[in-house]
Amino acid sequence: MFTAASSPVDLLRFYLPHNHNTMPKLSEKIALAAESKIGIREKGGANRGAGLTEFFAADNYKPSPDFGYAWCAAFVCRCVQIAIVGIVITFRRPTTPGAWALIDWSLGQDNSTHTKLEPGNDIKRGDIIVFKKSHCGISTSSVDDQGRFYTVSPPSREARIETQF
Image 1 (cartoon, one colour):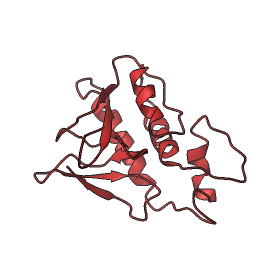
Image 2 (cartoon, helix red, strand yellow; image 1 turned 90 degrees about the horizontal axis):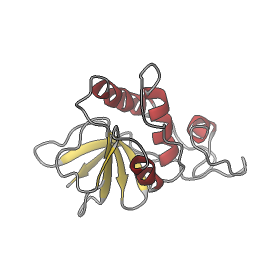
Image 3 (tube, one colour; image 1 turned 90 degrees about the vertical axis):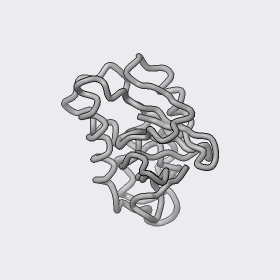
Image 4 (tube, helix red, strand yellow; image 1 turned 180 degrees about the horizontal axis):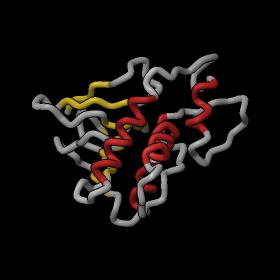
């Protein structure tokens, strides 16, 4: 799942429909994969550290090993990679190192992924969220009565980020 809204949150939503038997399971597995990575931190500078290696390996960008790069999209790619194990899917797994490139990925798939630019309050747990500021993460909650939801969106200092419409 994914999301983008206009102000004030500025995010974009790509999502897997919840109407197939396997999709609710996949959405939950994506959220669980994201939550399992809470606590992994950068070390030795921004976008660096041995803990980030698994994320960098999940995308198709291979820069010099001496330099890290913004890893929020690589994080999303790795969480989807973990979640699809044992599930039959019809879409290609994302491998992009760029948050905004996740939009092109979703648009280039079959009808098992959807891109929604104005998600409103229908964000669900397991949605992939792309913020207009070129950042992304995974929703770990649905939107509450006050319009808030939580994401795991590295490299934040906080494990879960509260976002509000």
